[in-house]
Image (tube, rainbow, N blue to C red; front, top):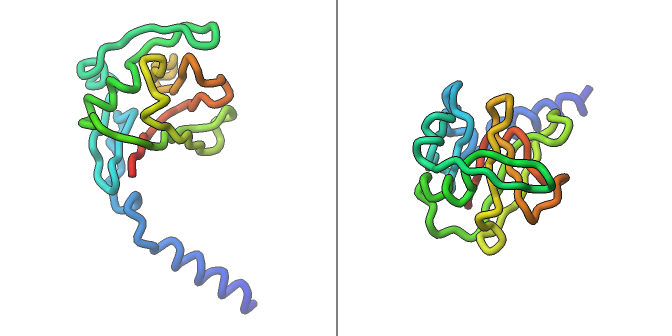
Length: 144
């Protein structure tokens, strides 16, 4: 019984930690992508706003045509001109677990795209990125 009490106390304390991400307001229902710098929201994007801010294009990656804004254009529209590393967060292949892909400014180029899927979500794909590393249902891009 004592172990359960200690475990419960740990979970309460862990749940009350001063995590910057938990202090942010959740995005509105129509937001498909949030860009976070440190503990601040740099941009919340809906699909129509994203299309107005970053030109949609097509490119072929792993034999499939991807259509949407280039990652670099989205970052620039979000106010990130000078960055070194970040993390793209979405869902895994089975869409039941969260995954993160670390990105570096020296590897991201015009071959990286946020494909707009048939479901209206975003998928990070890249010409030089193996398909198994693509991030589906991207919801957030974080920068330290």
